[in-house]
Image (cartoon, rainbow, N blue to C red; front, side, top):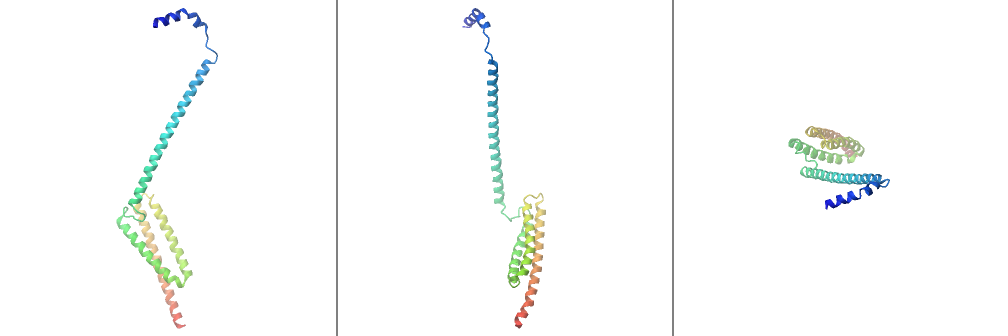
Length: 181
């Protein structure tokens, strides 16, 4: 068979040499190859984007899962994983502050303006505490931030104690006047 093809080419050699390819044949071949190359690149780009999107989704799911697990492991306001001693102090101060706020509100029923002023001061201190609480999650030294939170709670306790003393004094001064009438 190989010999037959070789013989055929030799016999018809002049016919092969006379024929020229049509004009633009190579331009067409080049354009077709360029188009195939662009299609291949586009396909590779889509594969890459698909893989990148999958990877991003996996990373996002793992991150959300870790955050969820961490939140579940350490409920909001539970700082025992940072320092058990400081967490106990923080919880104790929080409960004492709530008691003092209740007492202050009860005593302030007779003097609402004074109570409003007192509430503004404690409200600002509470905002500072909440700011520290928010910073705790990003703090490189969580124990130091927790100590600052406890100092804020101590200051709130001191202010509330002073406010209670002032209100008790005011209430005691008003009582004798009311008894005389």
